[in-house]
Structure formats: structure tokens, C-alpha cells
Image 1 (spheres, rainbow, N blue to C red):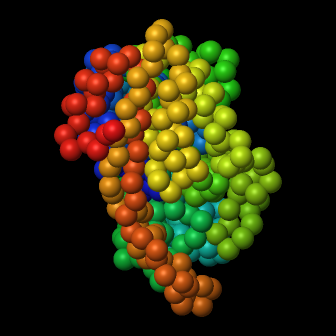
Image 2 (cartoon, rainbow, N blue to C red; image 1 turned 30 degrees about the vertical axis):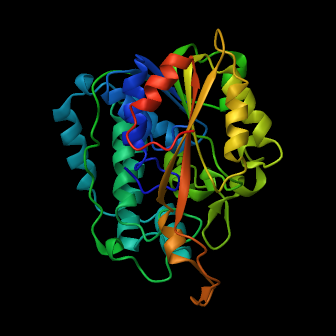
Length: 358
């Protein structure tokens, strides 16, 4: 999986244990991102629906959630990967914009990304392997980039991994078919088109920074539209010009999240949020307690200490490379709120060792 700000990698064991204790057979991951949580639920045998508004996240959901590994011809996949991996470099948009104007990749890897992406568009768009192959390319590019894990900026000095050769690898697909949806969470909950689930997992954005800006390179690799760009990091102009998600707007986010929590059709809701965000723990509990689920909704809040993202340890640097200010803290607290029928919520909470619930 790619490096990702807001990844639930450390929290996945907790969420997996909660899922197991819930007894769920169907699950919704409404802000799926890299699909780590959706994959954990799918590995447990649940039928999963993964939703996101970002292009790259929808691609990952197609690859890891919607596709059934048992239906993939592994020989055809291996042949396609070998063919693409053997293509000579072909300088294009990635080389010019993300290697020369910006410095996300070394030019030799950028040229290979260009060649592979062009071949995918020319020869594979109608192939069932397309989401797998494009996911493989993005993951390969992530292994040779020069960032701290997000694309609002690149490192002043090349990261050692950037010197490696780009190498395509087969994504680790999972058995069982699911559903991948591309759309806005509020609109999908509001129109009732998602269906009903045993468990809904919600991990909304925590602040004003939109993920399509943090990962604009992946957005461009998926869209492959040679977009106009701006700034030192050559971000897509749509990042600047189009309205942000309601979840990135402080005044509007609480009402939007309340609408989603209240409206999603699920027996139990699991909401993750952290203590650096716009809602405090009391507000999160109150928001979930207002949910109606065929009776009184019981709410439990669990809290987990964890390391902040790597950029917090590196700190902020000015244009000349000098450090600006000081890192205030390198740890934060992740909240996991459970909302549903009392006995189920209590059973789920008790299944998590070392929880700090109240």
C-alpha cells in the first residue's frame, strides 16, 4: 500500500477485532482512502462496499474490494505486468511536470511511468486487469518517490528510495467480490442508494486539507488528463479552483457528519476521529448518541495513543531548507466511537484489549 496521511495501518487490528465482535457479515467503508480497513473486513469474509470521492481511492477500491482474486487469471496478470515492466522510458507529462518542474521522481523513473501509463490507456482500458495494473503502477511509483508521504511538497534532497528502479509488482488481491463506489458520502447517504449494512465504518477528513491536494500526483495518474497545474508542487488547478468537500470546512463539517451518522443504514456505526480535529470527544459522543437505530442507541468511546505522521517529526522548513519553528508534539490520540444496540456495543468494546473507554 502507498504511504498515506491518515492511514489506519496502526488502528486496523483494533478495527478488525471490533468487526469480529460485532458479528457483521456486511460492511460499509464510507471514506475508504487506501482501503486498508475495507481490506481487513473483506479478509474476515464480509461483503464490503467501499466509497470515496477521490479518483485514486476509487481505483484502490476497485482493485482490492470489488475484484475477486479467485476470478483473476494470474498467468494473464503476470504476462501483462512483465510486458509493461519491460517497456523503455518515454518522456511525457510525468517526466516534465513531476520530475523537472517538480522533483517527485527522478527523470528515468518518470519516463518509465509515462511509458507504462500510456500503454495502459492504449491497450488495457477494456481489460478486467486494468484496475490491478494501474494500482500496481501507482504503488511502484510510491516506492520510488521523494516525499514524506504526501504530495503538497517534495524533499529538498532526494530520498534514497528515489534512486531505485521502478518495479511493477502484483497487488495482493483478496478472495470475494465487493463493491466500489465513487461519490460524495453525504449525497449517497441522503439519497439512500447505498443500501443497508450490519456495520458502517466512518473515517471522515479531520481538517481543511483535501486529500486530492495531498495526493494530486495519484489523481493525475488515474485521470491521465495532462491537467493545468500551479505552485511549486505542480498541483492540479482543480484543487485550487473547485469547492472543497464539506468535511474540509470547519463550520459545515459537524452538521454534515451528524447527517451521515444519523442517516447511514447500519446496525452499528464505528466512527474514528482524532484529538487534533474540529470536534472534541464530548461532541463526537453527542453526535453519535443522537442516532436512531430501532431503539435506544448506546455509545462507547475508545481512545488510543499513537505516533503522528512522519512529517510531524521532520518539522517545517523554509524555502532555503532551514527549519522553521519547532515540532509541538509527535503523539496524538485516536478516538473510536461505537454507536448501536447496547449489548452489541458492549460486546465489541470488551473485545478490544487495553481500550480506554468511558
